[in-house]
Length: 519
Image (cartoon, rainbow, N blue to C red; front, side, top):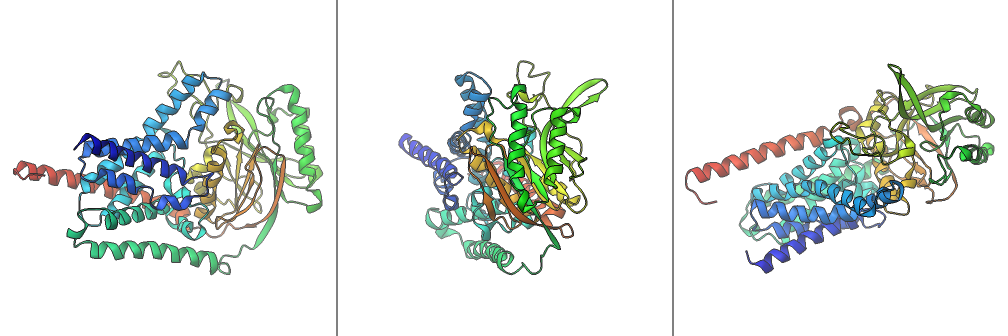
């Protein structure tokens, strides 16, 4: 392959990476995802597995460097790291994440002109996304399907197969378009007379299902009752949030904003993650003020606060959400299960003894041990703290145990005015659709809002402003979706099938070589 051709292919790969980034928020360009992979597939054409891996790696690096660039801001501004160190962390993260599109590209190059290549490619992409969701504690940030969060007719299949089903459709479409327009081997492939209609049938069936769910299923899925819910966004400056001298002012601000809803008489008021910036459990004066706010409102109050427990006489800290009743009394709490690596704990402490926590003021947290909703039987809430909202298995576990609504308590002040708050909010849409439960989101600096069980954004506030949002949410606890009951069976099945297919391709190639047949 000539040097100029290699350079051209590399540029195609980088273009795919940039197009992938453009399909995610804050730009409303989700339609780009449906052809974003075509330049990468074009660059792989005629390349060997090693070169394909390099091209996929280049596409991934371009994508993730521009997608999660905000890591530099978080690490530098709030982690107080030197900017060169912060940039190095971003580069290392992008290098790791780039292994996934690189592996996909290698797999695609091995497929050659095989039958049902579109389905095999889509299955491989989904299988790799699933691995990314749990490997090394998991980082399923902005999986491809999330780019469609505003296309309600497309994302309804999430109640069957999760966000992975939407990713599958997007890769399916990309591969088919590439095959029809750019694949030089296409005219010789008689199998396309079957593959083309199967792809079209899969996509149109998914759209038909989405339209059915959006327009014809309202009468079949009517919740017996509803509750008026308020989301309060205090917009507390991160620089003073943990200052003891500012704690009283913080509580007074939340009191003022919460009591402004008194005329509407909400049944539940939700404050953000660590909105109570002290140990509420210590029963001090400020803690009693929080209890009195719930009593004054005559409403249940859900809020975040740091907490601790003693294990063998040693204090262990938790990122906790409490719910208190109007009486007032504490009804229960939930400790965050999936912590942020280097933000809330240091993984592999013995090996990474030199690493320091990013968020010094937040404490070195321990994960919670139980995923279960909190609140009274008539108002059971499944709590997702911060980026737990990007892990579908947590929302699913809450709903299986009786959660009637989902609540995402978060503090996105760390992200500043970057694209991260937009991306974070968009992923919460799928948790509502997957489980057919409405979701309330309370964020310290935004975005706070409400998402219906169909994924419609009912209300969304602004960034960096005081907000009080209200919405009436249906309370449902008697029906479960296929996804709630069976989880990621679709992604797991595709991963297994992709591994089997890969082993078959490698075995077949070895067999041909052993018989002296040129590849």
